[in-house]
Image (cartoon, rainbow, N blue to C red; front, top):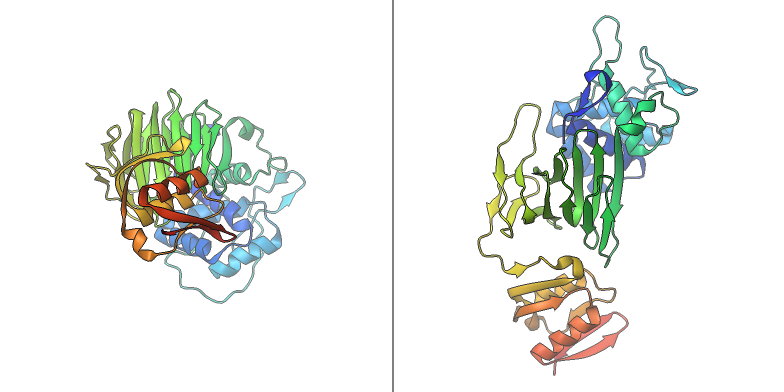
Length: 365
């Protein structure tokens, strides 16, 4: 997710894009989990810290929103003083606040300031563009060429929903229940960032490569169909369905990673906070039909199967006897049809169904 060209030969990196996204995510009152994730990202490298400072330089925020972020960081960040519709191009005006000191591995300073004139480099202008695109506040920026540079969109599903979306380049993305993906279609590259859940990408043929980021890995394809999932433990699962694709560790400023080709219907797993991919030679489930709610299992504990079905259930299925969870099931199940699924499980294991306000209960007859 790097190398998107800007006017005058400038470029922005995946880190710049992430920094702009962080400005947007932190505008609202953040959760403790989100702040912890942000802290880890900031502390990961000096590049991240500089990119975020550049993004904050031009981020259109209310004073209270900016102060909340600065309070968390324990330091103030410069901000351009906009008058009318044009940003100042000289030294930025900074609103200085005093906060309790925090021990950060990398101080947050915008990159690109000269020693003598203290002028801001064009990297800040690129940051301005990305923040504007991410936050969606373009009218006040003197950058008319922004509108033709990229299209940034967020797609999401609620509990129990499976939806398909058409992207600006003609590609299709199907999102599983409780999923969210952010997509940028640029002039020379196409990018997607899977925040949570599972997505099937049917990538339209194009000279621009399509990069899908999940955890610390990047899936790259020019034309193909690939499933990408991030579970509740941040483990990433990849399954190539057709075409060709490869996966590699997320590139950094000082490291370019080698790619590993994906094999059709051969799952690849890696931890979200690390990148040590392993190929699953004998998967226990055939998930190719998950967009229609169907999954086929060679063998699965009943308790785990019930948990999978409850990902879609409006009314949860409950096993009254914990011993039932250790039974094993096999076969093809439509997880999205809760009542039908519960009836089939009851028939297979000779269980009794009782429907109450809190759930669909299964117990031995």
